[in-house]
Image 1 (cartoon, rainbow, N blue to C red):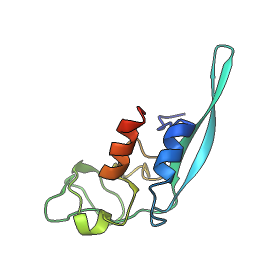
Image 2 (image 1 turned 90 degrees about the vertical axis):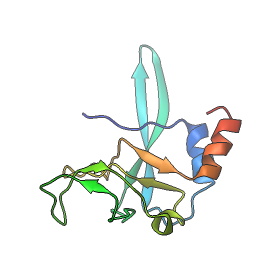
Image 3 (image 1 turned 30 degrees about the vertical axis):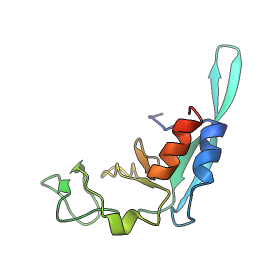
Length: 118
């Protein structure tokens, strides 16, 4: 089935309150069954890739082409990410950008999450 990022309702709500509308993803609910308990969590599913790289400093795999690549060392362009509240940085040739295992959030969102003990 694969790995997914799972967010609680509280975490999802805080992140959602800091989104700009430019992120191009949707929240998908997931039921998690553990013993007798069922909980609802949320995972971000991106609808398209967003160019966030600083191409001068990001390190890609040797076999990179324009559609399929692995990022070995991501370096983000401040200009490209400033209008994003959350974005995916773990792109891979296997379309992991749709259901990422790594996402990045803005510093002000991170501070709010720290205050809320999320």
